Image (cartoon, rainbow, N blue to C red; front, side, top):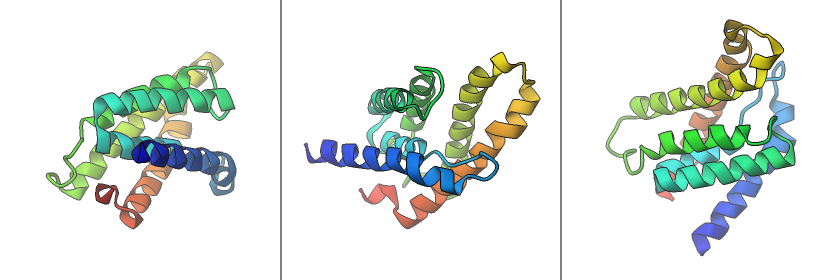
Length: 158
């Protein structure tokens, strides 16, 4: 029960950070996704199934609140992210930091690629433009925030 309340508290904090702090940190409309960072931590700690369920739930909440775009798109991308990141359950101590962060950066890239390709493909933007304008910058920004947060608050200690 304590873990559930802690997760709810961190989820509310991540959503508030996305609503309040992210716009201040935005660089040309590119901002870090704190909900995604929390999802990466939860999935790596609890595994694939919890990661998927949590990703779907928090993604749906993000869509309903209006942080996302199409209803269900954040739920889809965060479910996939929860599954992929959940494969690293209890592996942080067995792999080096470079491999761990590299795999999480790839997962973040996949998340934003799916999100933005579905979101903006109907606008007749080219795939190259979507990747260069949205996916890669958001991946870099969120990855740097993920690494900094993990360095300051190492999640394997929880």
